[in-house]
Image (tube, rainbow, N blue to C red):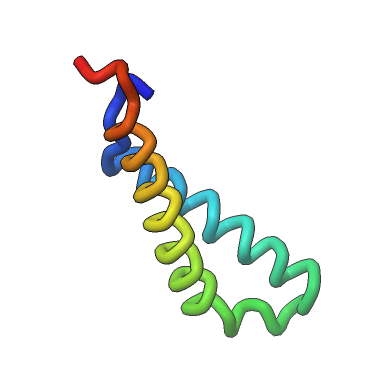
Length: 66
């Protein structure tokens, strides 16, 4: 990786994870999924943070630091 993962990466991941989680909830639970929005945000934040940490670790260990 040549670019350090930043806030754009984090917010993009948050949007993708939250939307995908809500889509799965809508498919599996129908109208009851709207009550699970706080859970979707929480899992989106946790998933995005873990993904960002792994990307940051990969960037830090890469040989192509400029």
